[in-house]
Amino acid sequence: MSGRPAVIRQRDLKQAIMAAQKAGAPRVELRLGGGVSVVIPLHAPDNESADNADDSNNSFDKIMKKPGA
Image (cartoon, rainbow, N blue to C red):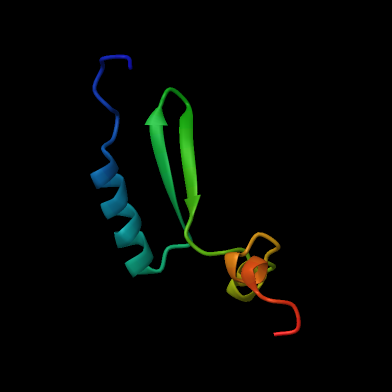
């Protein structure tokens, strides 16, 4: 640990993300200074829907599903 205070607190970032979601913003961009910025997308890309996420090869339900069931 560097011993210096954080640039932004997790609590503040969480509040900003929740407010942006409520307002319908597509992303949150955080500029930390020194040319560093972080972009957090709030919506899944169009080609990856929630239906595809549930059917991944690593899905616990799919792994535990019995053959023929």
